[in-house]
Length: 310
Image (cartoon, rainbow, N blue to C red; front, side, top):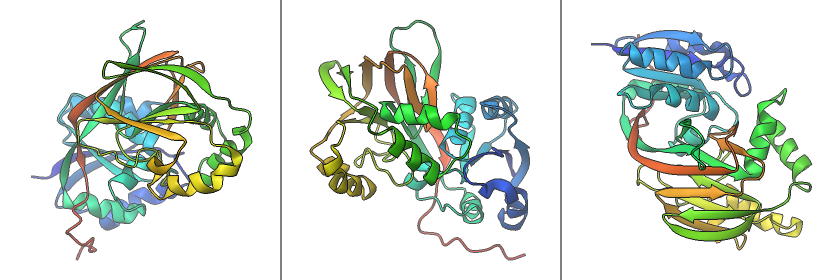
């Protein structure tokens, strides 16, 4: 029996690799395994609406074609269902895809889907810490408060995406963004820290191979919290390579914890980075890990990604 699948394409994601997706699907997907339909998003968070509709109709799998924000939209729509998540990375950062060791070439990522290798990973539920309402968000890659959330907010309205646009924003805003005082409760233990940003991670990186939580695992039932001081300019030459080689834990400017429940108070900007997208949540933000809550098509590293023989 074929897998009933919806493929959701973000037409403005990343740097344009999704533009030939229908041709690549025809050439590389196993048509004996998948009965698929392609839909395109038309506005912000439209992917969530489409994914929720697909889950309600009993689709076995919903595949996000885009970056971490597109993946997050799909996860919001299929949460609390048995619908599987698939990823064809076409974004700029692609943090979750990189952590899962998925190929960043869309045609190869499609062949990974043909393996139908299922994995169950954790997610993080994010709510307003003051419990002002019942709104909640799901994170599967990484979240954060402080400078990273500030950049995510700016990227949300940026005219261009990609590594160059992200780097230009970071360089432009680095000097002017200051540390803030935070009250952090980690599994009931209280800490007061003056920090540049605080990452709450399910996977190792934000994207671009920028590993803010080098010890994180997608299925260990824990979040990894990285509290980073603003790195002095004369230390960037040491700290930046550590971040891009998965060794940020060796930096003197970082403090790391593992936890199941985290409350961050003092988020002066009110914005939170949720899988690469900025969201105005508030000054108090609550994170709770939900173990083994998202079923995903991963990669079987023992199998070669061979072309289909027609």
